[in-house]
Image 1 (cartoon, rainbow, N blue to C red):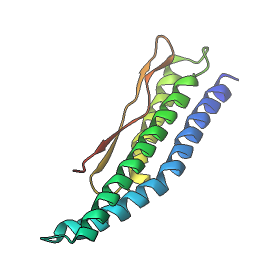
Image 2 (cartoon, rainbow, N blue to C red):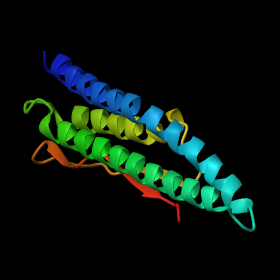
Image 3 (cartoon, rainbow, N blue to C red):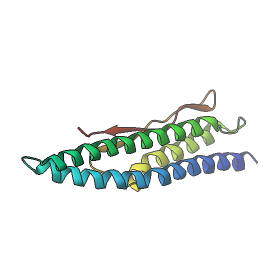
Length: 145
């Protein structure tokens, strides 16, 4: 029974991560489109007043999308912090589960098509004595001007 509970814990973590990836995949695609448009505008030496307004609108739209991605990452972090492994799980089994979960979080960057200037790093630590996460989630670094 112990193994089953730990498997359910791992499945729950995977579901939360997959749900987050689904939420942000479209947002990252939209950011990539805006980035392309901004690259075209930034390549010009002088912008017309209309192009200047378009550039400002694009930059604002990208900021809005960035905030949505950050909000989704915070929501994922909260969801992951709520679930805990079974208290009777053996330390060796917890270590295996933690390794799998850490790999899941690291694989996020590979699965998502990130626009240029975006970097995702896992932020996962587990306290094996208390049998709970110290922290879990991702850190998103935005490399835009």
